[in-house]
Length: 260
Image (cartoon, rainbow, N blue to C red):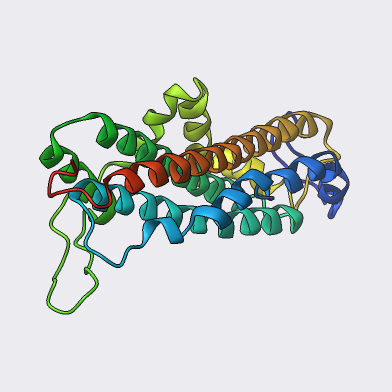
């Protein structure tokens, strides 16, 4: 089969050649898809027992609990995304991989933002301001999301922009925003970039074209690097949240209204 387009990027199609080409990535893919032992241990030891309580907690403890529970929920989404991204990669569905990797990146950004929020709560005396921030984080929306519980209606808080989460990763990696922008380019209707990912897998894999082979591997390598960064970051941020949140909540659990 011949693709009558610019020879520099694609012309000949070899169905199934992608299976040969992705062998170099499999060990990295498996590692990124696996939750670290430290994360498993911390999660099993601390959650949920340290973040649910029988007696009314202090205000500070309640705010910290909400922040950690929010993060644990995001991490449960990350667990699903790890499996989905790996399955799509192994199935040659590279057109969709950047989209889910971008979602994973946003989930990590949300967890990291929550950790920053917890640190602010631990340091700042103005609880009213911090509660407004946590309200936006935990149940804010831009379209009106129905809140759980009879008669509670729709959320009134305005959620944070996801780019606030991504830009908040600057203290972890200077490359975080550029990687996110790269994933976004591939997730939007961009004909050229979409096509590169499309011809990386079935049914029109183009790896026997030498020019595309070089460029295609640069795209897959960068996509996997983003997956690796998000997976490692989500693990480490969640462990820190669980450890720091547990200590903080234990200290203020029986405190007064202001958590003192």
